[in-house]
Length: 238
Image (cartoon, rainbow, N blue to C red):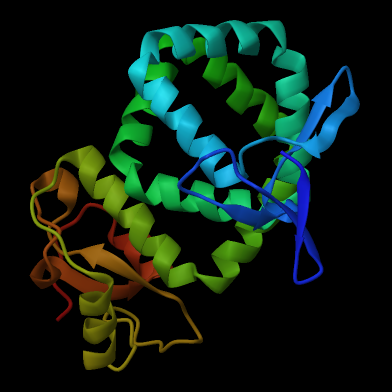
């Protein structure tokens, strides 16, 4: 096909009889041995060439899959280098695609991760140990800062872990704990001191180890000192 100008725009007629004339920007370059051949452009425009390839792949899927597999094996390093280069040039595009994929396939990804970890448990434990050793100082500083900023939340989580460990029945929410502190005026029911002079803690009237539950009705606010003095005794200061 020869180059044909239309309204001073260079183009050519696509080899697909149903397509017609298109500007040269719609055609891929035709090369052989690294050099342009013929008029420098392929006979079909990109859209028609891609449609032709899809039709051929659909007619012989096994042949094209095997050909693609062989090409990937023979050019693996080159393909990986191209992927890395494209990812570095388009980080936002890949980040958005990754986030979207993870949201759509969350359960599948988590299941595969659990399966992989179970098969290589000691390997992942060693990675965890190395990471903790390398980042120990940074992690400890973060935990101290987080503890200062989220003291109530951290205390609640600690209490919940203790409840689960003792297999104690019942539970209460952080909101219920805040309401009961407010009800008693943020006062320790044993010594009478008020926050922020002291830090109120949850005391189980009937201790969990003695069969008490973690429901809010079994909780009273005591300062840390009074809670420690009460120990495992059953005392209701309300």
